[in-house]
Image (cartoon, rainbow, N blue to C red; front, side, top):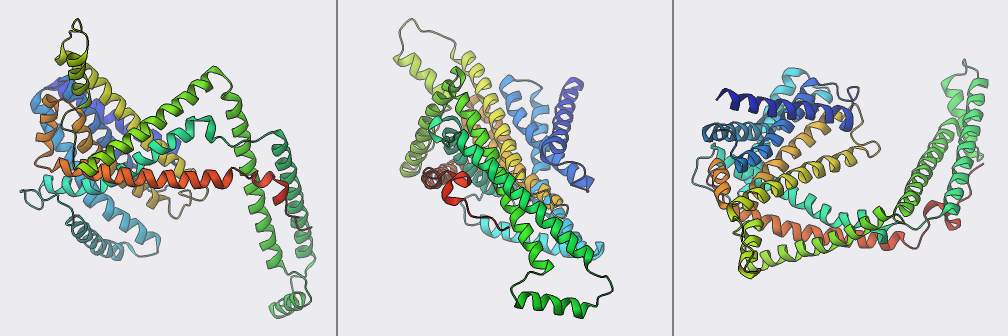
Length: 461
């Protein structure tokens, strides 16, 4: 028992520390998010999420005693549902109201009202889905059932995006065709724009310095009015022009950076590793088509897989394979299931984290001091939904002997609905993303971007 508790403590502590490090190094820095409680909530949710996934691996390995694993399932699930339904939403409202200037007591009262409204809306929305079980409203099964609706929705959309975007990431066909001449044109354009911005800033600084400080506001406004009437420019219009030029310079710089990266990728695809990468793109294309077809089949036929993929393929090998092919189905089913679930957990965790890193690297998204805490609380909530739904869907990839333990821990939940809901959303989302990417590819293929001579708009002097 002491050893089991030590293992659990190490898992929780290691995942918590990893969440803290990821939060500081990849997502935000300490200067951006001022609330320590926000950081602790993110790390705690990350720790519980990863511990739930690791607990599935422990079920396969048979590590720890049955009673300890059962208690750990209940503790982690209760903690996660409490975070997702009560703690994170309430604190999100409270932090938002405090940032808008409300005093602490008033913000606390209004947050309670908003949180109760949120719970009522959550209940009304999930009532539309066939998730009712025989348990009471405040039981764990009811909470997991309603959390699973939104969690599976998030997971299906992100999985569809990953399945469609993987071929675009790996295949040479989707690279933007660029060359050194385009890069030289962009560099020239960037230098011209930077010189104009510098010259206009100097002119504005000289004009401001030459303006007497004792001139009244009335005479300043009168002078601006005459300047505008006779076609001149006042200080405000000059500042707006400088900002527009700075936005143009920033866009040119981003385009230049992207094209330099494309040049590197083109050279990379000429190497043996790049050619292998290109073949991986074809593999992911076939896999994406297979997933969409199977999801469509499940939706149309109202079907859900009843056996895990490992056991299914082993049965086929024994049935249709050569007669000399004999192996221990139980042993290899356990081993391959362990590897398969481990890979799925790793890719799921890695894909989720990389997705949000890309989102928060977008300019002016998440790095504002005013809304950084809200952004972290939102991603924390989404993360909890995502990994809770992962548990509901990973259950089907386990052999029957391991699936029973997970089913008993989750309770009397209608698992069939969640698989059908995932297949439907995955099919629709994949088709939508394919349409969007095809339109974007056709729209950008014939153009050269900001480096083209057709878009070399004369800059203001």
